[in-house]
Amino acid sequence: MIVSGILPLKQVEPVLGWTRDISPQGVYFVFQRRLKVGTKFNLSILFPKVSINGQASVVRAERKKSYGEQVGIAARIENPEVVRTKSKT
Image (tube, one colour):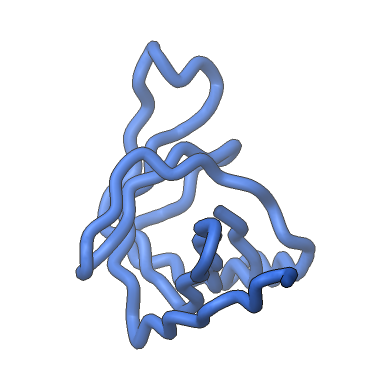
């Protein structure tokens, strides 16, 4: 998963997160920094044949020992766009 455009941090460089759970309404992922509830960001979740792109907003952030220094983030995906990737044939 790629996270970018974090507001209000104005981070434009993409950063990687690791998806733990995904549903039609949102995503739970492990990320390298804590984001405040309400923070908006752009995300792309990459699968072998499709990607889901859109803006998301943080609804929960939590530290867990099993994540080490990283943080678990639950986010609601707003206006997701599913894009099929072209096969290389």
